[in-house]
Image 1 (cartoon, rainbow, N blue to C red):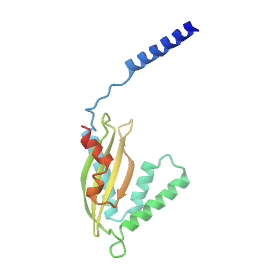
Image 2 (cartoon, rainbow, N blue to C red):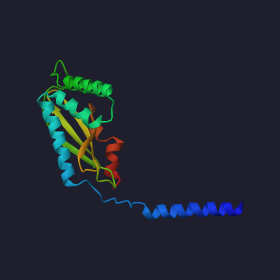
Image 3 (tube, helix red, strand yellow):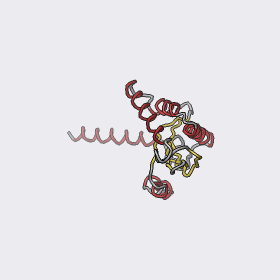
Image 4 (cartoon, helix red, strand yellow):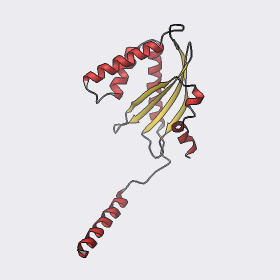
Length: 175
C-alpha cells in the first residue's frame, strides 16, 4: 500500500509539474489592438445609425445574428420580436414615450479584461429627445480575428449611478 501511495503521489506531482511548464503565463499588459477597437466602434456606430433612422428591424436582426447564433429558430424569432418591440418603445417621442429620437451618442468608457486582448466592453451614452440611455456593448474577437458583438444591453439608470457600479469600477481600481 505504501508503494502504491508513493507512486500515486509521484504521478500527481509529475502531472502538476508538467502542467505548470506548459501553462500560459499571465500577461497583464495585453490590451485589444486598435483595429479591434475601431471595428467595435464601427459596429456601435451602425447600431446607433439604425436606431436614429428607426431601422429597428436591422438592429434586431443584427443582435439575434450576433448574440443568438446558437439559439434554436423559435428563440431567434421570439428574441427578434422582443428587441424590435423594445426599440420601437425607445423611439416613442414624449409624451407618448420617455426617450424619442436619438440625437447623438458618446463613448464614455472602454473596459478591458486584464490578460485578454480579445474580450472588451464599450459603454455609450445615447442622447434622446426626452432623456438619456446608457448602452453597453461587449465584444469578442474570434479565432479568425473577427470582432463580434457578444452582448448588448441598455440602462435607464442615471449615468453617474451606472458608471459607479462595482463591475464598471473594478477595472479602474484594479491597476
